[in-house]
Image 1 (cartoon, rainbow, N blue to C red):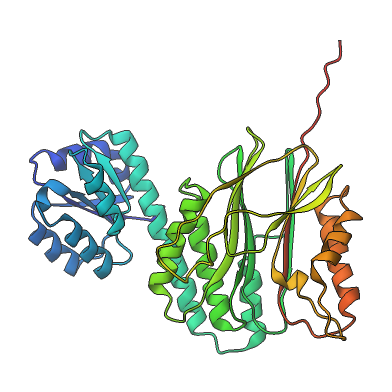
Image 2 (image 1 turned 90 degrees about the horizontal axis):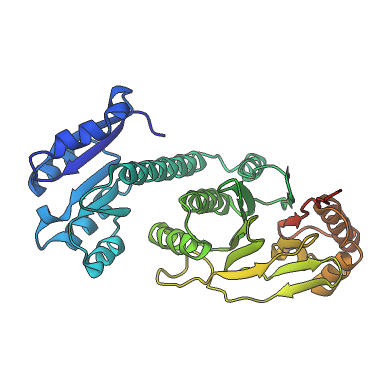
Length: 391
């Protein structure tokens, strides 16, 4: 949570300040939130011009007929300011329009302040993550260009290799090229029963790719933590990457959520390679799915949620094209057939051992040839404990 978060409220009702100060009294007393109240659009514009705010709460009744234009203006002029709309109207078209213009969220009147607190907290988390991403980008701007230093940065955004908790197990790894690349993976708990997994490959092999990877990873995790579906998460990430993409870069990516209560893996694909499903008895298979294009190319792109039922003992392998396109001294690619054969001979083992066998096979195949691309994998296994009743 941000310290001393500054919140501007635009509402013309007389009791607004009292309601907010009473509902958020604990945050105010701890100096966590600081509120400013205005009753007109002009007052709001003057205050925004001379002070930095984190969240802007607007009763759209004050704006009359200029709702969309004002929201779009705020989004353009203050990119780190998150806007929350308050409305007594139940007009879905109006609310949809303001969201498209850049509003973060909306709340209906009469306000349920318990729910409203959660909305404000989510907005502030988003502000914090956006600023973290911006700070990371600024840090990258001052890198001198030394390849070793940039490679360390690339490695530093990864969460580690292993997760073992309850009935799930993950092993992920990445072997970067001598140049700076843009592969990354991530895994994180969204709740006690939902686990998020990401793999991605940024175009290019330079400092810009490393910076784009940092920003992309931060944005994906930010929206994921808001509880959005994978498709909605990618839709929002894509919109931001397109708006800020002066270097015309893009990232192929896959993001999925495994639900331990339903044993379903819900995922979306942005131009990335198909995942491999590894069943204990049936062996490995590529899973084709509905896919959008890579993130950062075009704003108006729809992404689809695909669903897999995961059985006990099953594994999923997510990977980048550095695996299948690894080249040996004869110019041959490792290709998908060799990838499947390695898995066939290793399907009843742990994610860590499978990954090690795969990387070892690639190294043996390339036989000292220069690595042309990052090699990255994330292997997930569902291994619920079997409890037997003894009478």
